[in-house]
Amino acid sequence: MKKDSFIKGMFAAYAAIVITKLLGALYSIPFYDIIGENGGVIYSCVYNIYTLFLDISTCGIPIAVSIIISEYHTLGRYKSERKAYSIAFRIVTALSLLTFTAMQVFARSLSLYFLRDMSEGASPEAITLGIRIIALCMLIVPFLSLRRGLLQGYKYVAASSRSQIIEQLIRIIVALAGSYITVRVLDLGEEAGVNIAFTGTVLGALVSLIYVSVKSRSVKKEMLAYDSDLSDEISSGVIIRKLISICVPIIFVSLTISIYSVVDMKLILVGLHNLGYGDAETQVIASVASTWAPKICMLISALPTGIVSSIVPFMAESNAEKNREVVGARLNQALGVLLVVSVPMAAGMILLRQPLYTLFYNQSQYGPSILALLVIVNLIGGITSVMSSTLQSIGFGRAVFLCTFAGIVINVSLDLPLIYLYDRIGFPSYLGAATASIIGQLVTVLIQTAVLKRRYRYSGAPLRRNLVKILIATIIMTAAVLLILIIWPAAQYRGVKMITQFAVYALVGIVIYFIFIYFSGTAENILGKKELNSLLEKFHIRTSSLQ
Image 1: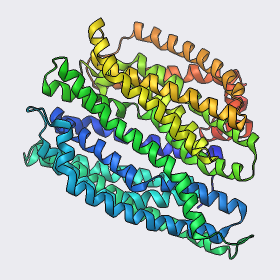
Image 2: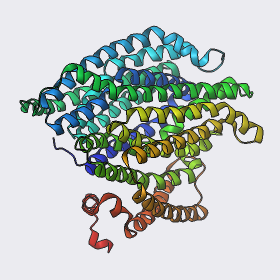
Image 3: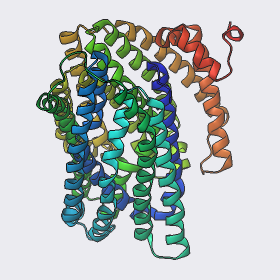
Image 4: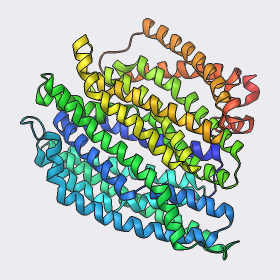
């Protein structure tokens, strides 16, 4: 394996996550057709519960391991980094068993939380069985995440990222083949098809764990190659306290977000139900907002996930060296990469929301408008994620929790009021929850920026200058695509014609946007000349041909 630079690691992680998310989004097209709306509701409810317990089982330890190993390695504390990993492994083992047991015991109660007052649509029994099947992941995924944290701490980002592709491929193959045979061939029903998909999630995690375990052997050999610390070995008590100091804010943030996701779905169900929507219709809208529309947003959410995977060890290393200028420069670079890719992508997805949602799930009364707002939520949420990881890596974990908690409190507080307000003024009421999310995310970003400026003397001036050019390029790109839409309107039904149109729209938009970004110097300002040329060479583009 070869260690990755900051930019290369970022794009390696992004490429892997895009492939993973793209596979997940594309697979959802035939999968949704197989399991139907009722199966989609079961899938959505179970995954919300799974995400919550997964956060509990990992407790932020993979990120903490990445930070501590990078910091201790930089400072020459080699025995201490080995001890830290050993302690983290024991903690993860205990949490894994605890969460698995809790999901098995409380599966019925958790299913009733969603559907207690509803007699139509999905049944609590179906959700209960789904929770118990996917609970097996609690015995696998925490250890998978821990080993990924180890690889990332040693800057082997590409190897960690490849394991995600392997996990997704196995999951998709089992889910699609298994659900098709179960529903269409054996005629066992949609609920059985969804449960096969959950089994695919378990098998995908297991195969990925085997792959990562093999790859992490070389890292463990590298850890053992360093015989002694440059200073006294750090005691277990100090390491545990450091793990706790990093993990506690991550735990609170992850749990708060996961609990919010569950509560948000419940508030949508309650709000729409109170406004007179039918049980089945309410469930469909809630599942679209919490599961199916977000799958289309995967290209927006993939990049910040990749940046976070790459940025943590580098930020921890710079902070250990007390180099504030490098931390600020890397944060601006990371946010610049995020904005230069995500802003035009978000604009295109909003512009093409109707045919885009139709391409994935057929025509929907609710999907396109929900998708448009969720694209904005994911764009702002990506900025929040990168800022949070930076703050966490430089020791401001408590600030991360306070920022996130403040945003979520505002979000939850506005959910029902905005749902009822939108209904009263004639707007689609189900868009109120997404609007609340946008407001909550914006508040979080503003507080995070203020914390960095006040406590770390961070300056975002270079980023703001690049953002102006990005927005100008996006407006030009959007105008060009809009003109093509007027000349060649998007097809109303999914098929070869619609796919061809999307390819043309995307190609025209990318070319126009890239030309402006390149010749305005924005790309070089963000990536640096060396990294930009290296990236262009991978696509067989010579800089001389662009002059």
